[in-house]
Image 1 (cartoon, rainbow, N blue to C red):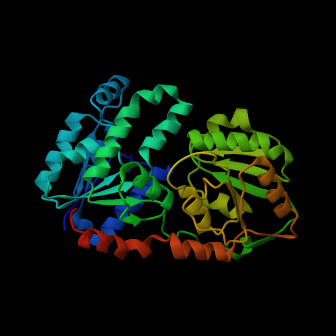
Image 2 (cartoon, rainbow, N blue to C red):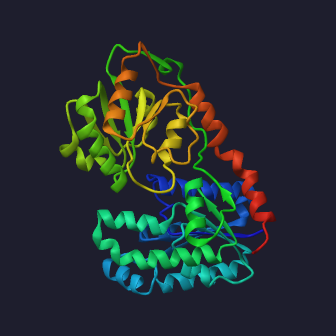
Image 3 (cartoon, helix red, strand yellow):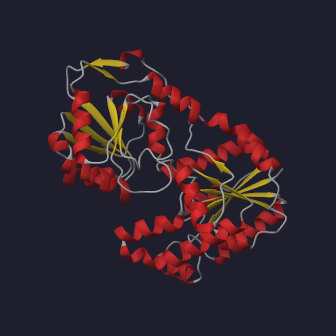
Length: 377
C-alpha cells in the first residue's frame, strides 16, 4: 500500500502548536503502521526556506501567502493554496502510484474532488471548520471573507472522503448533524511518552505558594483564556502563575503581575512541568481537542480546566482534575488545593489514564486495520 500524506500545516518547522503536533502524530502513525518507505509526504508550505527539505519520500510545495494571493485563492473558493499548487500536488500523487491519500484538516475539498477515483481518501478532521471560522470571525471580523470557502471545502471534503476520522465525540456528532455522515474512527489526541519521572518532584510539602502553570502558544482562545484568568482569578488565588508558550512574551508587559510571570517561548517545557504543582487550562472557546491537555496528562499533573479544555478526555474519575467554568469555581478549587499539607505534583492515576487512552503506539494497529480493511464507499 502506497500512501500520499497531504498537509498544508507547517510540519517541516518547529512543533510549537497543537495542530502541528497532531499532524506529526498522524504522520508517524502512518509510518509505523505501513512502513516509512510507503508513506509519501506532500507538504505545502508558505516558507521558501523549507523547499530544500524536498528529498526521498518528502516533496515540498510552496504556496504564496501574501495578502493578494490569499484574496485570489479565496475568490476561487480555495484555502491556504491556489490552483497552481493544487495541480502540482495532484500530478505528483498520480506519478507516485498511490492508492491511498490521507488529508489533514477538511480545508482541501477542491483538491479531494479532483483526486483519481481509484484512490481511497482518508480525511482527518481536527475540528469542524464551519464552526471554527464562525468563532474566528468573532475575534477578527475581516476573516468573514473566508467563511464561504471554509464551508464549501469542508462539505466537499466530507463528501469525497471514504474514511473520516474525528478527534472526539463532539466533532463526530457535529459531523453527523451538519453532513449526515458518521465518523469511521474517533482518534483522540495522543503522544509518545517522553516523561522521565524524577522522584524528588513527586510530592512537595506546601511550604511555598502553589505553583500553577499554563502551556500554550499565543492564539485567540489561549490569549482570551489566559487574560481572563489573570484578571478574574489570580487576584483571589493563593498561588503563583507561570505562562509558557510560543509568542506569549509579547504580552509580558500587559499581563505580568506580582503573582503572575509571563515567560513565553522556551526550548524545553519539561522543567516547567516538573516545577509546577498543577496545570491550569482556562480555555473558554475553541474546537477539536487540546494537545496540551494530553501533555499535562503525560506529566501526571493535577489540573484545573474548563469543559472546553477537557473536551474529548475521560477525566471524570480523576480525583485531582477539577472542572472549572467560572472564576468562582477556579478560585475555590485552586485555594482548596493550595490549603493541602502536600501537593501531589505527579499523580499516578493521571499518568495511568494517559498510558491507557492517549499513548500513540496503542493506535498503530487500529489505523492499519481501518485503512486496509475499509472498502471505498
